[in-house]
Structure formats: C-alpha cells, structure tokens
Image 1: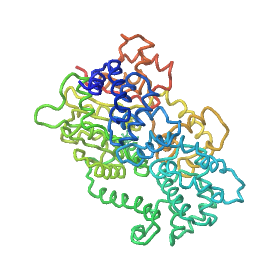
Image 2: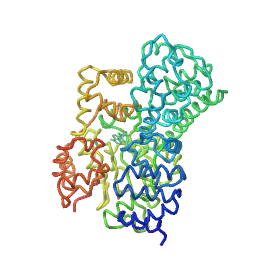
Image 3: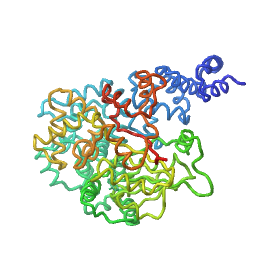
Image 4: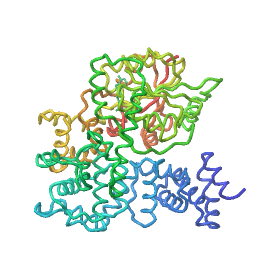
Length: 573
Ligand SMILES: C[S@@+](CC[C@H](N)C(=O)[O-])C[C@H]1O[C@@H](n2cnc3c(N)ncnc32)[C@H](O)[C@@H]1O
C-alpha cells in the first residue's frame, strides 16, 4: 500500500500513532504534495500536536485551497487557537479563507485581526485613535493601512472584535461625516469598507448628538454623502432606496449599495411567501417576537459547510442504529431557528434523507433564513412562522427536534419543552442549548450594573453602555465583556446583555427540567478538550452522562459552559 493511503487508513481507524511512520516516508518522497501535508495536519490534530497541525494545514491550503478536510479542520482549530506568526503564506491562506462563502469568517477574524494589527501601518493608525481632535484622523492614516487586505476583509465580511480598532473606526467615521477629507481612490474604498462594517454590526458604534444632527440633514446626492449616510443608518430605510440601485456610483460604492439592498429586497419578497401555523398570543412570546423582529439573531454572513449527512452518521454511530430507515424521510424540527445558520447547517448535516422544518416567531429572522437557504442551495428546509408553544398544531411528528438558545427566552421553559416532547416520535431525540448560571456570572454582573446605572435597551443606550466599557478603566468585567463576540454587533449585544427574558440553569435544574418532561440526558456536545479533562479529573471509567459529576466539574471550572449547555436528550423508556 502507498504510504499516504496507509497513513490515512490508520488515522481513520483511530490509530494515528500508526500513521506517523508512513507519513514520514510520504513526506520524504513528496514534501510539497498538498495531500501529504493535509494528512500530516489531520494526524497531528489526532495526536494532539496542534502546533505542527497548524503549520501543515496552512502549507497544504496554500498549495491547494480546495482541500475540504484541511479547510474544515483549520477553521475548527482557529476557533480556539489563533495564528499569530505572520508570514506571507499565513496571510495568503487566511485571506483566501475569508473570501470563501463556504467558510464561516468568525473563527478566522481573530487571527486575521491579530495579523493585521501587527503591521506597522495598522499599528500606527490604531495608535492615532486618540490624536488631537483638531486633526482630521484621515490625514494620519498611512496608505498601507487603507489598502491592508486582511483588515479590509474583516471589515467587509464580518465584525471587528478589537476595541482599540473600534475606537479608531468610530473616530474615522466621525471625521468623515463632520469634515471633508480628500476622497482619494484608496480613501473612498476604505470608507466603503467602513460603511459595510457599520451595516454588518447594525450601527453599534457610539454616536454623539452632533453626529446625529448632521446625519439627519444628510441627502445621499453624491458618493461622499451616500457613504456618510451608509456609515450611520441602514440604506434600506430610505424611502427611495431602490433608486440608489439605478444610479451611477464609483465601483466600491455601487458594490456596497448592491450588498446592502439586494438581500433586503429579496427578504421582503420572501416574507410575503412565509406562512404561519399559529398566531403569537402568549404575552412573553409577543415581547420576544418584537425583540427578534427588530434584531434578527444571529446575523451571519457565511458558514463552514459541513459534509453532507455528517450529523446523521454521527448520531447513528452514537445510537448504534440507523435513523433514516424505510421509505419515509427523517423529520427534523428546528424550533426557534432564527436567521437560519442552525437550520441550514442541520439541513446539510442530516442530508437529503431528512426534511427539516424551521419555525420561529420572528418573520424577519425567517426571511433571512429563507434567503440564505437559497444562497446555499438547500432544498430540504422549510420555514413556518409561529409560536413553539403551539407546535401541537403541526400535522407531523418529529424524529429529531433541535432547540438552541430558545427555551432560555420563553415564559415557561418546562411548558415549552413539554410542547416539543409531545411532537416527538417514540424514541425521538432532542438537542438543547441552555444558558449556564455559573458560566454567565459576568453577564449577570453586567446586567446588574446596567440596571443600577438606569440604562435602558434602546439602541442609543446600548451604544453608550458599550462606549463606557470600551473607554472605561480596566476591570475583570470589562475584560470579559470586551473579549466576548456578543459585544460587537447590536443584535448580539442585545441578546448578550439586554434581553428582556432570560432563564439560566444549574445542572441540577437541567436534570429536573428533563425529568419533568419524561426525557433523559443522552450525551454532551462539548467544546474541544473538555471531555479529556473531565476524564483526567474523575478517571477514565467516569460516566460522562453523570450530571452530578459535571456539577462538581463545573464548580471547579465555572467557564466550561460559556458557550451554553449543549446536549442531546431522549424520551424515557
Ligand atoms: C437566540 S435566538 C437562537 C436562534 C438559533 N436557534 C440559534 O441557536 O442560532 C432565539 C430564537 O428563538 C426564537 N423564539 C423565541 N421564543 C420563541 C417561541 N416561543 N416560538 C418560536 N420561536 C421562538 C426567536 O425569535 C429567535 O429567533
């Protein structure tokens, strides 16, 4: 057998150590073969040698960007391991990944920012954020910063998550509005990226009264004024928005207008097609519906496309039985599917043998989801508007229900879960994500501070609270908040710190909730590295389904479930 094939076979069979010798052999023969480098990267991950894995995967993708396993694995690794070593190769690979529609930008952004913020031109620009206010900040920007590919991609494709860079962007936006910097081609192009960033973060940047007054007077009669407006307000709200599409603009401005308006117009059409299965009558559901109609969550731009049927096969492996059997399709319900990231991933990851139905009480979120489903050519996903408390009105029963981040914002989580369980086929599975009380201690502290300061939840108040935190003195709470991805757009910030309805749980309460609905805990979906640490603590024979052990673990490691308790449960019996 060829050494590469032998190495792959050993790794796939769960014996990565047996892959090492054949890989050495393959590498000695073909050191620049991207497939060999990919296999070295994948094997190194399995062996826990993440440094070697990162290097090998970056090299592999630089040679062949289409290597799917290398791409998915590198993105997964970058969620927790950032690339800090700048080399032209690393920059090329990160830029190329950021350009793709089948790769979620979020895990890449921290690495991209790390790399960009090390560049002298970008450092110099960021350092000028507090320069003399009488100076136009645009005059201090080095040309190399305006054209920095990594920085520009982050601004255009996702969200900045660096508070110092945000302060510079806030200042640049203000000076662009209130002064009239010369519009060189590079500045115009950068201003369009800044406007795109403001659109992406739903205008989360702080605004002064002077800026607000100036924005009210703006008429988008030329490129400069159009950009000024787009940096502060959604172009979609202009009475004559569609006219903008018909006018002549410089290329970066035209691209911005297209990127903002076309999706919006498509969503308006899709909203008209959307059907309802129930009215929203419950008072809390109506409040929550209002929240998500105005702030669809999460607004996402692209996602890392999983392998088809990946989740179906993984579940079948855990259950030791086939799920999609007989002629019928597997029925999957995504309850509270929101803007569709979860539902689209589910539709792909369960595959064509599944029919996925996403329900939600926000029409705006569902329209976003419908548009994205088209974009990703996902055909086995349907959408219905309605309250999950009324799910009994649907004609079908489900093999699988996914409900993440939803039971945390209903009036009565137990009643809501019971309604979902009643629609489950015998032996069906439910995937839940619930907030952990322990992991959200900092959020509780922030919410208390917000209440004590009498800060409400209007966009302007949220912006001012953020500004206070960004410019305020260092504290553990500030570090926590500024380090949280939820801090960096208006809808995520609302969800993170300003939600009107929020239930948090201890593991004992999770246990009680499941029992009260006739469910039993089936298995965790844990962040990488947690299970080995659990086993180190309690021994290899410890049962990972034992929630009492996890209570001890969480007391000792309260941040473990920062990304929520994510787990599968099943009907008893
Ligand atoms: C935090 S978002 C989570 C979205 C998605 N599940 C995810 O994990 O990315 C909560 C979603 O649940 C929806 N939701 C909340 N209460 C609901 C209810 N009673 N019925 C249907 N959807 C609900 C909201 O409209 C919102 O889209």
